[in-house]
View: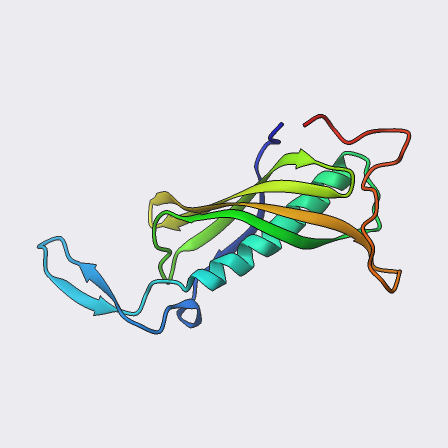
Length: 154
C-alpha cells in the first residue's frame, strides 16, 4: 500500500558529519589520495529517524487520523547502506507509508545523495513508529484513527 514518496528532510552533509578516519579518493588518472569525506552512518540513521517520524505524522494527519499523536520510534527493521554519503552531498530523505496499524505506522525511507549533476540512491530503511499521547504521564500508544473508521488499506 506504499504511498507516494514525500521528501521529509533535505540536508547538506558537512565536515562535522564525517567519519574520523580518512577515506580514499580516486582521480580520473587512477591515482588515489586520503580524504576525510565519508559521512558517519549514525548521522544518516538520525536523519532516517527524523524523516520517518515526520512522514508518519504527515500521513496519519492527511488520512484523517488523530492530530494529538506524537510519534516515537519502535524499530528500524532494515537499514541498507548501499553507497557512501560524502561531505558536500545534498541528501534527501523520501518517505512512503508501507502500512498503517491501529497505533503504528511502518514507513520506507529512501536516502538519495545529490552529488553535482548526479543523484545516487545511497541508503534505504524500513522503520516503525507508534503514536503516543504526550499529555499523559505514561505516554501510552493511542489509536491513530477514529474507531468508526479504519486505517487506510494496507
